[in-house]
Amino acid sequence: MKMRKQADDVSINKTNSMEDHYSFDYRKAKPNRFATKVSSDHLMIVLDPDVAEIFPTSEAVNEALRVLAGALAHLPKTPRRRKQAATIAHVV
Image (tube, rainbow, N blue to C red; front, side, top):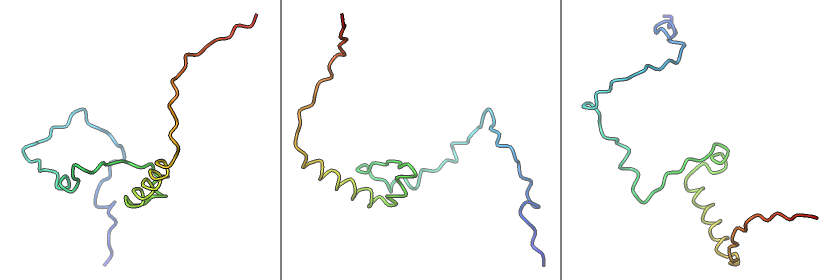
């Protein structure tokens, strides 16, 4: 028995075209079942791919940020400088 390829069964639309308008029947919509998994005390942040390679889990990110926060807490406090208006020196 020979299996047929999926491409033989389904015609594939090669163009990625968008319609001008889509009508959705919101009466059939269901609540997001994953929304309850994220509590209000969590913050979602998207990592860039190169950073995500270094920190593959949220635990790794949190640990690194806690180390960084601890290091920052031990730095000496320095007064913030006000931005000074740019001065132009005229040479005569």
